[in-house]
Amino acid sequence: MKPKSRAPEQDDLLRPRLTDMIDLRHELVKLAALIDWEFFEEEWAGFFPSHTGRPATSPRLVAGLLYLQHAYRLSDEAVVARWVENPYYQHLCGETFFQHRPPVDPSSLTRWRNRIGEEGAEWLLTKTIEAGREAGVISERSAETVIVDTTVMEKAIAHPTDTRLYEKARRRLVALAQEAGVSLRQSYARLAPRLAGQVGRYAHARQFKRMRKGLRRLKGYTGRVLRDIQRQLGAVTDLGLRDRIDAEIALVERLLRQKPKDKRKLYALHEPDVDCISKGKARVRYEFGSKVSVATTHKEGFVVGMRAMPGNPYDGHTLGEALEQVEILTGTPPKRAFVDRGYRGHGVEATEVFISGQRRGMTPALRRDLRRRSAIEPAIGHMKTDGRLARCALKGTLGDALHAVLCGCGHNIRVILAHLRALVAVILATLIAATAEIIVEARSKYAGTGAAA
Image (tube, rainbow, N blue to C red; front, side):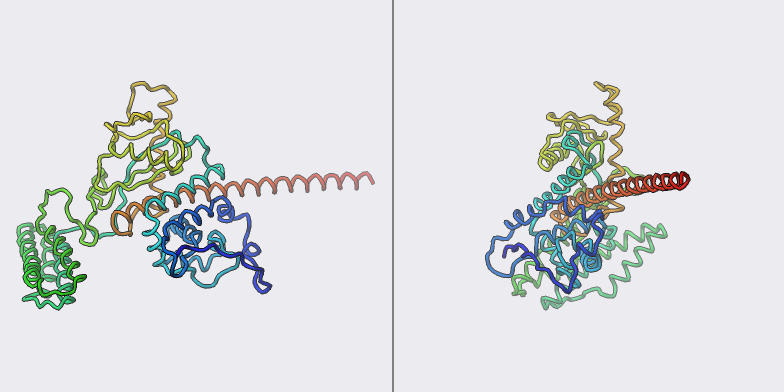
């Protein structure tokens, strides 16, 4: 059922309002006044077509929790737990009185993310851009000049090795067989784990001939369990369980068929769409996750576009889509884009694109602007260290898309809060200086009057 608008709460003589408990100069209080919360009340109602059942959670509460989660690098459980303790969090989410119980179960955030999809997440990013304009962080023309780059958002998976994948596939097949009541000729529950450990020791000792022989045996164990289940698959009558077994068999067959040099290999059984991406880093040769395109304003480093690019496409082929997203979210078509050398051959004509190292047609002002292209690197670094871009725990390609956009929201919120914090500090310093000057003038005047008397 669609979420209902929260009724205005009546004054309670026994409880003070949140606005009486908190400092109204706090940056979160000022941020709450900058964001258009009514937009979510109106637009997100379309995600609930049914008119029966219990009303959904307040969209402002969910939007506020998602903002806080990615601004302060919190999990679903942690942001709900901290919401109960922090009156400023509750004020941002629209509460009138201090609440002593969690507003929602943490699993509700998962269902909300799946319901709003990438489109709803982009609305969250759009509102942070509008809030940045209201706060004076960026101007209306800031989106005309952007910096675009790509990075890797790693997935929450273990480092893929053949040993681990074969052993995990065997365990998952055995578990499904037990659930379906299929009697296996041999499960290799004793031999396979012992052999997997031995293969790891062979690799550590650089005894690669023994290691490869152990890997072949381990692969054979998994293949035997797979074929044993396939022979008895007709005895499984539960259609839902049968579908799960078929899907698992398809994954394991793909794993057993793949070769070391194959493209689009399977790196995780629970995340089949993970890509292996090499960005040429000396410290990390390969990263396993999804490529993400990031677009920031040239001067302020404010995120105006962020999108996951599954399939590890060439950077130049993602530029047109990234610039199109910037125009949709900001309402301003970008006139200039500064990129690195990985974007050569981009094919974009509607926007002037300047590539690092370019010399033709460059003026001194353009050279200075192009040198600032690297300013996007610390922004990406902050999103990985201060935000949650370093590791995505959401499932599938939809989870990658949602997580990337929400990480951009978190970065913008942190930039706005820092700006508001600095603004309050300047105002307080000005007031203190003015007060001190008045006191000095009053003392001098008083001293002069006493001397005259």
